[in-house]
Each structure stands twice: as structure tokens, then as C-alpha cells.
Length: 377
Image 1 (cartoon, rainbow, N blue to C red):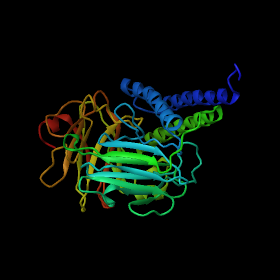
Image 2 (cartoon, one colour):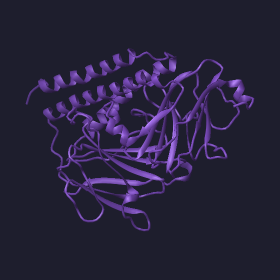
Image 3 (tube, one colour):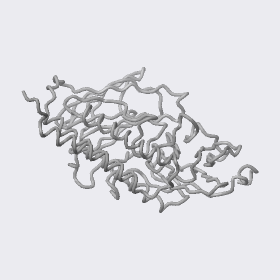
Image 4 (cartoon, rainbow, N blue to C red):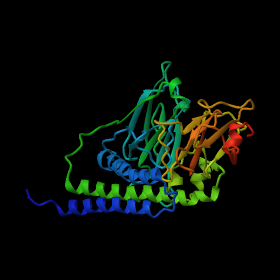
């Protein structure tokens, strides 16, 4: 017993506090539009990601006592969130076996992505996504009930291998129109659970330092993405997730889902202008696409207050199967308007699910708002 805190805890807590200050410094060093909302959301993103890092690592980061939890929502957005997706996350380890069970629901896609360490910097260089699957690859009963076993060694029934170096599994449930979908119910547990031990100073200290590392990892990815996005000004380009993972141009991109197609761009307007994006249908069938506009910190604009994203189910299609979306500060009186509020610059993220690797880049142009209103676009 001691009235003095353990040195290991004091040191770790200092590291955690320093990481938050460093994250804020990284935000302040970015060359960004500098609007009031962008500054406010930048500072807010530090508080949000600090909370997220603590939840992921300190509170729910023990693979021996796994917790599958909803990891993103309108108030917690991680590195390019998709408002049409329910995100679930769980720390796991190949040394343990896990059971996943629940009810499929009727969303067009429920995928699971295995990934390497994103907390402690221990992953082999260039290794992000270690495995990929989706629930429709496995048997379930007539009412949609399913059960999967996740393990390093093969098991009978619905089995998914946990590849070497895996440290987490993430579920993405894509919902093009929430008014029309019954979400899945997903649970995860160890097949041989153990009572967690009492928390000790050394354990908490290690987790605090890992949370600090994760926080810097997040803002390295966020600020780096914004700096690079200027190369694609007022256009949207991309590649299949498997290509992105293989290319390993940035550490965060190696954690892409390998059955998705990712496209992105950086839009920049002047007063009285609009950005018109025509999304073209791919040659293959697909489960979903969705476009969202984001701030420099890769957070979707606050979609609980206005329309900042559209999908293949919530927008109005053109007769040829394309969709024309307009990003502007005011309603131009045409379908598929995305409200950028007071801002004239940001990012756009377009995702396709199960669309193959031949997705065309959208047609993009900057026009006057008056031309849109007059129907000349």
C-alpha cells in the first residue's frame, strides 16, 4: 500500500496528455480553409478522437475479454466515416477462438474486416487488412440467424480464419436507406471465456501509452489525407480496396476493405458556384454506393442537421442509371443537393460495395449556381 501513485502510471498519464496536445498542434499546422466551422470541428475532433482512443484501447481493448461495440456514430467519426454504415469493432487475437452470432437483418451488405495492430505500432510494415468476408458467404437459417467461429485453426461449420498478425475485427453494415432496413444483430464472445483479472497499474499504463500512440496515428492519417487531397481538385478518382491495400501508399490505406471500391476528391468553390458530380453506373451489379462531403478532418458534415450525403437509394436517379449531385451553399431547386453550409472547400468520399474493380470515375465540373437553377446543367 502506498499513498503515492505508481511512477509507471504518472509517466503513462503524462504521455497521454502530451499526445492530446500534439494532436491539437497537428490540427493547427494544417493549411485548411480556416472557416469558423472548420476550426471548431478541428478542435472538437481532438476531443472526439481522444474519447474514441480511450474507448478502443483502455476500456475495450483486451482480446481475452472481447467487447464488440458500436464504434462510430454522428458524434464520433473516424477517418472518413460513412453515415450509411453501422460500424462495430472488437479487439481480438489469433491465440483465442471466438464465436459470432446474431440475426442477419436485411441490409444489402454486412462485411467483416480483419486488421493488424493500429494501437501500438507493432504491425509488420505495409500490413493492414489481414482478411475479409461478409455474412452472405455463410449459412444461416430461414429467419436469418447465423453463427460463425473465428479462429486461427480450422473448425467445422461456418468458420473464418483469423490470419497471423490480426489484432482486431471490424464489421461494416451498409444501409442505403435507413427507413427501409432492419439492422443486423451481432454478438461476439470467446468460446472459452475467463474472468478478467483486476486492473493493475502496469496494465493501465501500457494501455494509456497505446491510446496515446493511436491518437497520433489517427491525426497523422487525417492531416496527411487532407494535404494529399489537393492533387485531385474538383475531381473524384479512386481504386478498388484490394489495390489500395496492396499499394500501401499510406499506412491507414492498408486497412481498407478489400471488397469495396474507394473514390475521393477535394472540392473548392467560389461564392456563387456549385460543384456538380455525375455518378456513373459500373458495368457490374453492386450492393451500394454512397457519397458524403467532409471537413478537412475527414468527418462527414453534421448530417443530423442537413443533407450532406446521398446513396443509390436516397437520391433521384437519371434515366440512364447515373445520378447528378450538386454541392452548393444554397438549395438550387434541383434534386440531390448536398448542403455545404458556409463552407466553399472540403473533401468528398464515394464508396461502392461489391461493385467489382471496373467502377468509372464520376464526371465533375464547377459551374455557376445560376446555371444550376436555370437548368442549364
